[in-house]
Every structure is written in structure tokens, then in C-alpha cells.
Image 1: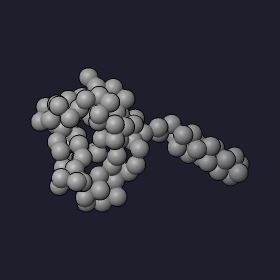
Image 2: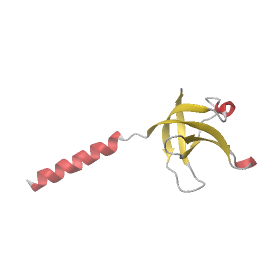
Image 3: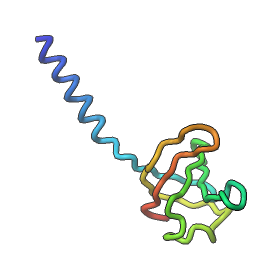
Image 4: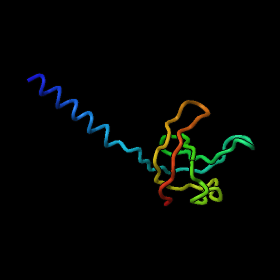
Length: 95
């Protein structure tokens, strides 16, 4: 009986881990951070107030939409390391 419960819990945990695919829906302002040679475009989410570095900003021409509030659908590429190193996202769709 205990083995069945343990197997069930492990299977459920594995399925829950596989369903988290890193899709994000963000709404916020687009800003440039950093100094001249090391600048990058970020979106600051209005709900969580976290900044996300945008990896493919040029493909969606997001540099021209600075200081605008936009809605993005994105995939998480890399988690945030700490202050000064925001999470990196890849934009899938701009709404």
C-alpha cells in the first residue's frame, strides 16, 4: 500500500514538472537599461514589478516602442541570477 502511494506521488510530481513550459504573458513598459556598450531592452511587468531582458527585440522592432505599455507572450530562456542580471525571455508574440 505504501509503495503504491509513493509511486503515485512520484508520478504526479513528474507530470507537474513536465507541464511547466516557461510561457509568460507580460504587460508593462519597455525600457533600455545599462550603459552605452552594455545596454539592453527590458520589459518591466506591471503586476510583479520584475524586469525581463528581451533577447530578440530586433525581430519585433521593439526598440521603437520604448516607454510604451505593451503586452507580450514570451518564453523564459534563463532565470534571473540576482540584482543586475534579470531573467532573459524570447518574445513569441506582441499584442
